[in-house]
Amino acid sequence: MSSSTSSDWALRATERYDSDFLDREELRLIEDFEERGYHIFDIEDRNGLERIRRAVANQLSKETGTRFEDVSELLNRAGELVSVADLNSIRLAVFNAMNREPWFRPAYYKLARGVLATLVGNELAMQRRINLSIQLPGDESSLLPVHSDVWSGDSAFEVVVWVPLVDCYRTKSMFILPRKLNDEHSKHLAEFRGKDTEELFRAIEPDVQWLTVSVGQGVIFTHTLMHGNRRNEEDEARWSMNCRFKSLLSPYDTKRLGEFFEPITLRAATRLGMTYTLPEGFER
Image 1 (cartoon, one colour):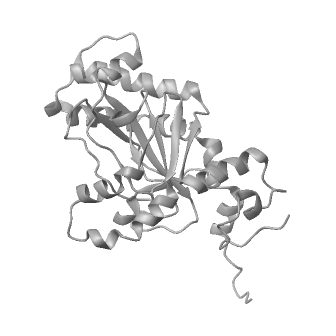
Image 2: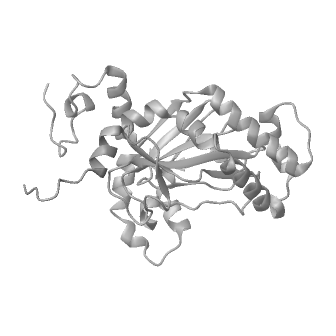
Image 3: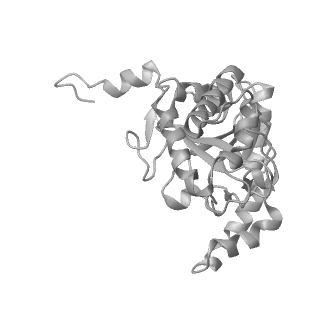
């Protein structure tokens, strides 16, 4: 079949994309991502995930002087080990320790390599430092009010790969506004000029989705969607990581290549093309 035009969004992915070049699984993934603006996927490298989780737990153990046998148990009960006053210093210690490890970013990328290839491409730029979020039960110091990253200088061509290190559900997780509802609510954003984000959240609250994501799963989403978190009302701490990826040659906003992003999968033909110059005296 022939490819459809980009304006024909009412068609299914099988009609918008050339199915001679994409297999059925890819089309299903594309369909789900375009319909909702996010997709929950199975981690592609479980050993890599466990290495990351173990390294985080080891660092928490070091910072708190706590021995542990089970990674999930240690991370889930972080609220018993860390006070709210000390939380940010602990988070920064773990964040810095992880981002110093040369294996960490390649391992994180491999958690979602296939999903990224299908939805974003195989020539990628990756955020230089992977973010870590910790939200203790009842803690109001780690809230992320409703927002869309494109409101503050991120490119609409970026995606976020969000990976929980513990099982996340209800208020222990994040909320997101699915794409169609996000488009509808976005039409009324001007009405909230001069108001706080709490009023915006109350307006979208009936339509947000609280993501249930287990260890061994991840979420890839377009951060053009409104998303955030609320106070963790569950009995366990939330630990999650997130990192932005984009097609290397797609448009950037204020977060630039070399400053915020770094090329990770530049292909040989692109590298040669970028370094090629016409011979002296040659005119087209």
